[in-house]
Image (tube, rainbow, N blue to C red; front, top):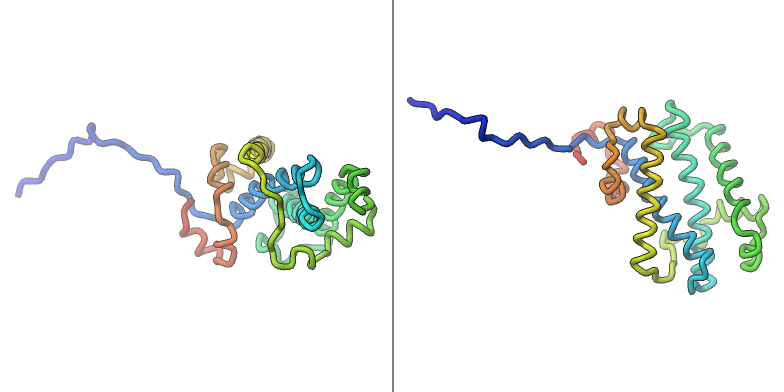
Length: 207
C-alpha cells in the first residue's frame, strides 16, 4: 500500500494559548473585575450621579466590603504565599492587615460628602458598614443607570490596574502562566462558576 506523503512545508503551525485553570488565576480574575466595579462605585457615590438614598447606601456598603475583600486577596496572592487559596483558613494577622488597609482607605473618602449623607469617617461607622449584611442581603447592589462612556472608562481603569500589577508582580504572574495580554480573559471570566471545583478538576479546564 502506498502511503501519501505529507508536504510539511505547506502546513501551518498553530500555537494555542490554552492553559489549565488554577485557583490562583480565579482569584486574580476577581481582583481585575473588582477594579472595574470599584471605579463604577466611585462614580455613583462621588460624581453627582442621580442616585436614590437606598442606591447610595447600597453602593457604599458594597464598595467598602469589596475593598476589604480586595485587600485580603492581595495578601493571599502577593504578600503571603503560604495561605489557603480557598480562603478557608486565613490567619488572624492577614485578616487584621486587610482590615487595617481598608480602614486607612476608608478614612480618605470625601469627608464632607460622607457627612452630608449621614456618615462619619470613624471606626464605629467603618465596622458597621464592613459587617452590614442587611442592605445588600439579596446579593443585589442597587445602582442608577450608567452610560457606556462611564463603563468604558471603568474597563480602561481595570486594564491599567492589571498592567501595573503585572509589571510589579511579574515573577508570580509568570509562575501561574498569566500573560500580559490576558486582561480580557480575566475580565470576562465567570470565576464564580468554578469556585467549588477541586484544584485537580480546575486544571482540566482551559482558559
